[in-house]
Length: 309
Ligand SMILES: C[C@@](CO)(OP(=O)(O)O)[C@H](O)COP(=O)(O)OP(=O)(O)OC[C@H]1O[C@@H](n2ccc(N)nc2=O)[C@H](O)[C@@H]1O
Ligand SMILES: Nc1ncnc2c1ncn2[C@@H]1O[C@H](COP(=O)(O)OP(=O)(O)O)[C@@H](O)[C@H]1O
Image 1: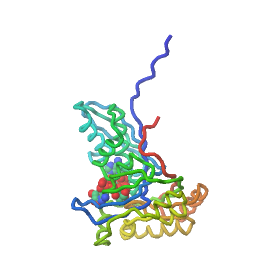
Image 2: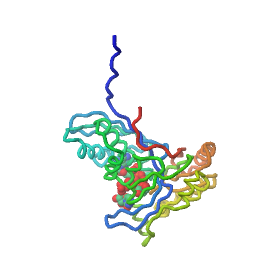
Image 3: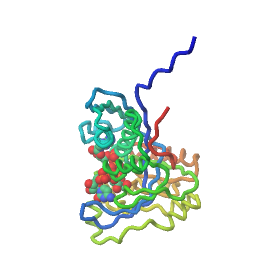
Image 4: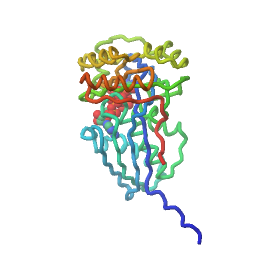
């Protein structure tokens, strides 16, 4: 007797990574209010998971659980729901599609780690797979840019240079893998508020450029060079809004990190160390200092949003 066919998949599971900005250079606001950026994104091994399952036609449903879930909007402003609706509207071919999305969060909300963007990217890919909509990666990234400036990078992953408002991404020439320790803040920071404070602190910033020393360090793959080259123009703004972050950064450096930087608009602080052993040591020591809500290890670069299983 022929063996029975495997059951049809009932859903799609996509995993998408957090990012840190190894460099974040910011210019003066454009007429549309966005700031021109020259940034180097780096995807790290801290992930949100999104499951997509069929729902009734025109039904778009969402549930969420995990880290910081009480701060995740469950209405139409959620980036995963927005992604599903955008894809259905633009590439659904007039079909009455529907989806039930389940988000499992590990990336802290409003942490400067692009957790919402990861969910948006994951939902785009999960729905495209579920609904059998075959799109080229650049088309998916183009759709992602409509959701948020960081979403195209969440799809791409790796280490990449971001320009425009951050949505134009191109893989960076980078060697090696890096060990990070991440220190989460007590409360999130609002990205628009940090950009506004940047404007107050920098009335006429230079046009942003990716720092040559950082690109050289990435080409060489040396953590010490990379540690010395980490830079974030939003860091002074984040520090004036959250002065206690200075203590976190200093504690990590005193305890042996080879580099320290606030990730994006903060408040997560990212520490670079030489190897896995140093990452274990630093994460234990930093936890014992009691300066952060939670301390985690992560490696990078990792791939962008991917279907799992
Ligand atoms: C600061 C960065 C650095 O990678 O990351 P996070 O700290 O949020 O993770 C990003 O620029 C955040 O990107 P993202 O969170 O996707 O922002 P968007 O949804 O596009 O925009 C939210 C708001 O941030 C401000 N914004 C964002 C991007 C940009 N280049 N200039 C801006 O001024 C605007 O006030 C905008 O209304
Ligand atoms: N799926 C989502 N997960 C987290 N936040 C989301 C999501 N969808 C929309 N948001 C909104 O996006 C804001 C920024 O969240 P997030 O992407 O986690 O931080 P950041 O922009 O600092 O990287 C949150 O405060 C929340 O209001």
